[in-house]
Image (cartoon, rainbow, N blue to C red; front, side, top):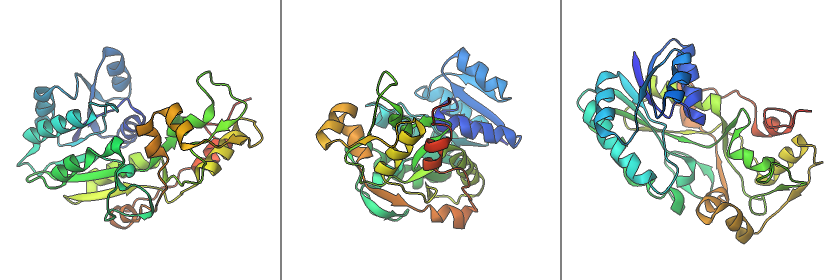
Length: 295
């Protein structure tokens, strides 16, 4: 089975690609440069050089594939238009085939909530408010078997959003600056566990299904910051910030998403797909794992 994968050199996409190849799956990955193509091919996948905005190329690859996993995202003001155009192009290749299409969303669309599940009301902050319209379109598609994955805050291998706690722009800081006062919870998932969920969703997800990719571990930002401080040898020294200070440091749209107080268990994926996240916790990774200073 040939899977067309976007975002294959990104944080999540590279983990998905590794697991697909470990399972012996045939993968065609869309990349933007010969250098990235070489990395893809070193893993035994087929690289296609191009861009997710190339509608003709996307449609051609969708037709040639046995299904699509979409992880690429600009992460800027073009995200809505790029994602919408990609869905149009990929559906032009998949509609009427009942092939699988796995689309990427995100946990922030549910806003503040102490117990998020897939049916919880949405209260998206501005940075991701554009997602709902596209996700409704994806889940309501006819002739394509679609699943939406909404990842929690993704961590692992020293990368992702938690790397914000490892220092200032110079990489050196006597304290770990929190995001806000640190009282808010983040719902989290290890990138390798999340990659497994994408593959299970591709293989087993029912059309129109949504799965939250959350491990069930929901530490506070203060707990995260203290773990990062310990891992950096700072004796748990953390510095709370006001909302205004956090806005100034990170930009208001991004900061408002990180200031959300969210908890989730990811139960539906366990029940429906047999997903079993078993990677290390974010706290352990920050204290003694991939984020900790190596002396």
